[in-house]
Image (cartoon, rainbow, N blue to C red; front, side, top):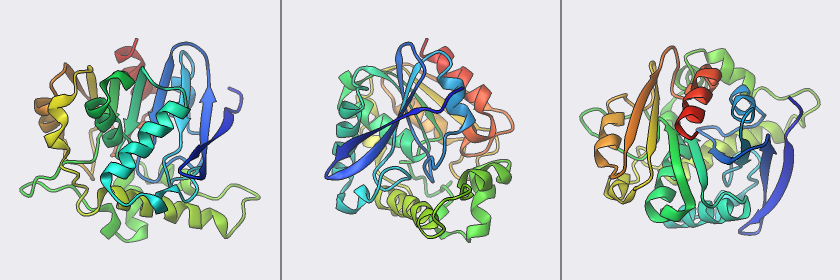
Length: 260
């Protein structure tokens, strides 16, 4: 498949990248922890039958320093609303992973007209002190790949600097992505989203990696109980927290089948 079209939108005064690829009904995708520094196989799979639109999150790769002006959870949600409007995703299907999954659910709760169906992969946002998530910001750098993916080499390859990349800017951008996620979900990844789940009327697909070491699988049940609309839950065999990286074909098929 050819390289995606790369567009730029303005979000709170910062240039923000939007990838666009494929044809058919629109499908948005919000990245997980660490962002998307490069186009990944799951995006190719999704773009085979949909117009896939992948806006960067503020502070994530492609999102410049947009996180630096977002001081509250409300600031983040309004920024995501702005991103979806400017990316021409209002009323479309919306998918997200990890941190992006949590933001997708928030949009469905607060602005129901913005989404038709929602497919999310192991969203952040809940906290159960009897079964707490793993804090990714408290880990040694060499432990993170194995927490994010069942195959750590996939994470390492995604984060590896491409040939010819600025040797200083690339690692700064990757570190900034972790900082941006921390600004949304610090502390403990808890945004008290459980208070807003009952507002979600759109059908929701909950995807979870079989070997997720960040968000316990039992959280899928908590999300399903709290959401007012219809939910489906699917476990992705052999996948970790970022299941879309470990098993791109399987995750894409589940999303496309659900949003058909």
